[in-house]
Image (spheres, rainbow, N blue to C red):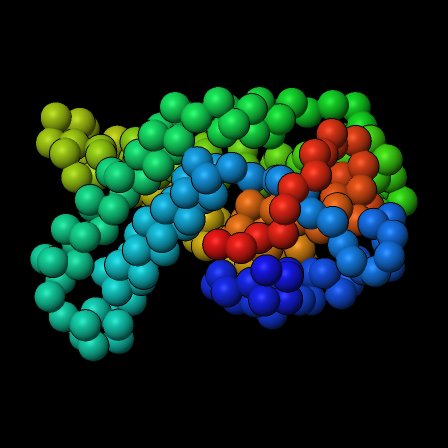
Length: 232
C-alpha cells in the first residue's frame, strides 16, 4: 500500500506531510519513513488527552453558569469530573511498562546546553543541529503537563476528601486547582495550535512514523531508523 492510500484516521495528514518533504534528503521524491513513537507512547498520549478533555469540559460546566443551566445534572457532571481526574495518571503509569515509553521519558527529562541555546535563538530554526528526538519547547511542555497532572490530582483530592484539613488549606487548594486549570487550558490551546501547523508531527502521533526528511530537518541529532509507510 502506498503512503497516499493510508486508511488510518486522516489521510490528508499523510499526503500533506509527504508532499512537504518529498524534495528533502529522501531522494527521488518519495519520502522514506522512520519510526517515531511506539504504541505505548501513542496510547498514553491519546488517553491522557481524552481524560484531560473530559476534566476541562466538566469543569466548564461546573463553573460557568450558562453551561451549568444548559447541561444540568450537576451531581453526575461532578462525579465524571472527579473520576476522570483521578484516572489522569493511569495511562502514563501503565505505559511505563513499555521500554520504548521509558526511553521517550528519559529523552524528555534530559535538558542540555543545546536546549537552552535553542530557546534563546530567534528564529529557533537557526540552531536545530543539536536537537534530538524532542526540542526544548516539547520538553518544557511535557514537564508542565506532568507537573500539572500531579498538582491537579493533589489539590482535587484535598477539595473532595479534605474534611480533615483546615478551611484555609481547602481554600488554597481550590485556588491553585482553578488557576492551574486555566493555565492548562491555555497550554493545551498552544499545543493544538502548534500541532495544526505541522502535519508530519500529527502523522507521527497518529501512526507512529514520520517522513525521514522531516526528522532530519527538525530533529537532526535524533538517531532514526528507516520504517515502512503507515498502513494502520
